[in-house]
Length: 303
Image (cartoon, rainbow, N blue to C red; front, side, top):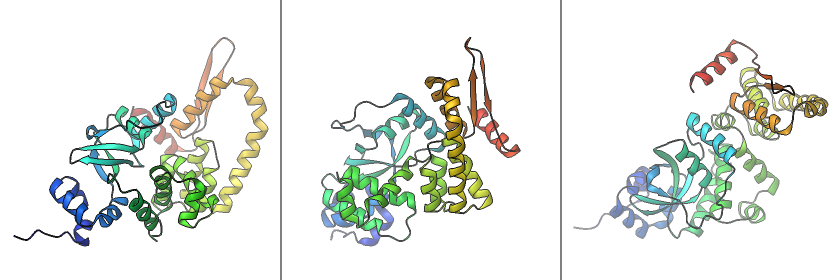
């Protein structure tokens, strides 16, 4: 009986099935590795987290515990938004290539499976070509483009300058996309859903105040603010903040301001922390309307 040949259509509809079928996987890789790599670049597989092992050659061994805890809390609420990348060892074993911090936080959040891009063992050159080809697609949103740029840097070991040459984009353009991946999850999701333009996202990415970022997100969606209007609100906010900063810094020590910022990031609202010399104080969470109050109540009750 003749052996079945896997064609392009088979890859498109069965790549996830191939991952679980060692015999068909090996056949597909041998017959058409380029098609397999190309399909894998934009296919996200949900993999059992206990089938993924850490990379023994991971150069980064220490992670900021506070940042890791914050990411863990975010993953518990929203899930893992940006997939990790793994190398397939066999049908039930994968090795982490990139995303160590996301992987650890997912373990801490007790997830049983996580989204992942799967790579072949020796597909470096093909992966680079496939990712660059993928970026040229017209239907990608800004977050998907940013993730592709990040994957090219991490998985193909490209510098900013080399990446710029490979994709034919200015380094500033690539930097603006990569900054989107540092935005809060809610904002990234709004970009993916088409609720924010690249102009809106770029303006929000320039802020360090997470509470104000999330406040502007809600205002943009509810009021349909233009990019120029958002930029004006940001400029006004920064002027007011600069005027109050000196006084605020004198009243609140650095470690307490850090705690205040953590509260603001968690609640997505303005939080004021006050404490006197005897250690007595208060924490005030501000809201604009009943809808905002209900959101805060839901957030508290969910814990």
